Length: 260
Image (cartoon, rainbow, N blue to C red):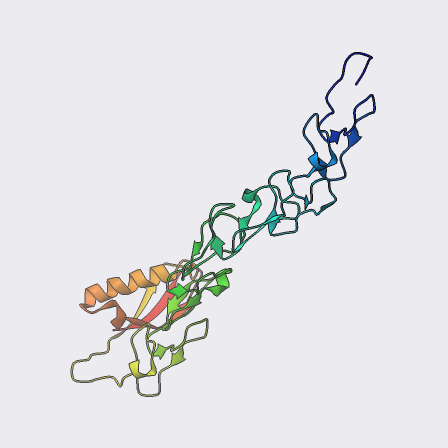
């Protein structure tokens, strides 16, 4: 106490186990105690540390664990598929790993097939590009592989194998040309899709068309729209229209040789 007639409580983080005018003792390292504590065992390990009452305290809590209040319990393990930093003090410090999603400190669910998540945290999983899929709990965009009948296009997109080719496996591999004397529809996945052209009801029409569009502007989307327009005019399906050759003849014009 201070003075002859007044006695003050020991501060938090200290204790005094005897009567008299002696000073309060400081709790061991990484422990704390309530005000007016009277024994060493009132000193409990801090948040983020674990150990017996009165110390010593081990720690800090290792990565993947936490301890949210002063007491003598061990550090608590984060929920499955989540992790935390060293010396974490709250369940919300446990965040979902890459490939998993959920609220901080809660249940972490694996990203569904055809999605991925490359960062830890509570963000949602990202959807794979069109015509591609991934395994559950995927962590990278490159885990999204093209379907059979599709191959890697510009960037991470997957585009259909062109007329006269096929692809029987998933992944970024190139499409394989059909055997000589046979052809296939766009997006074919099997060599058996390559068939000899029939002559009884098939007419092959070739045209050379010049359009006012640069190479960069003639995107996959524009090519598809162009095919649909030609198919509608000819009364055939868009898959029956294919490009034999696309070449730039100036900075603003492109010549397209197409077949129906």
